[in-house]
Image (cartoon, rainbow, N blue to C red; front, side, top):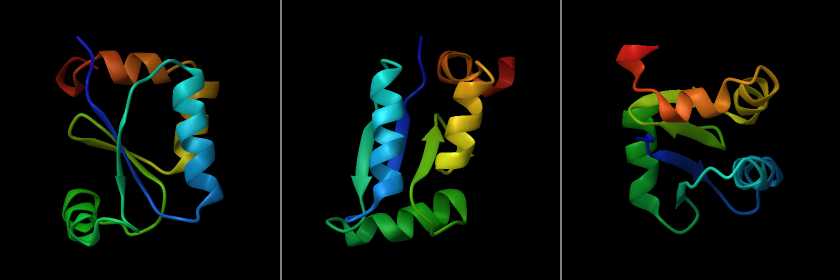
Amino acid sequence: MTRTVTIYSADPCARCGKAKALLERNGIAFDEVNLSKDPDGRAELAKRTGLMTFPQIVIGEDTLGGLDDLERAEADDRLHELVATPASRR
């Protein structure tokens, strides 16, 4: 069972594009909330993560962080584990 991955993005945002490409390259499906097109998403992002920078990646109910955090998880071979494992089992 995999956890839902949500990426909060904005247009234009090169770092958002890199984050989406990294997830796609790793075969990880994600839901995108484009805050340029969804103003209500900004309030959801602030409530969910406490952050307003882009991109923000949320796995299940856990905030992973931004592009640097996503790249670090990939480099450390933790990305697939984070997506596959519920937080309570890590």
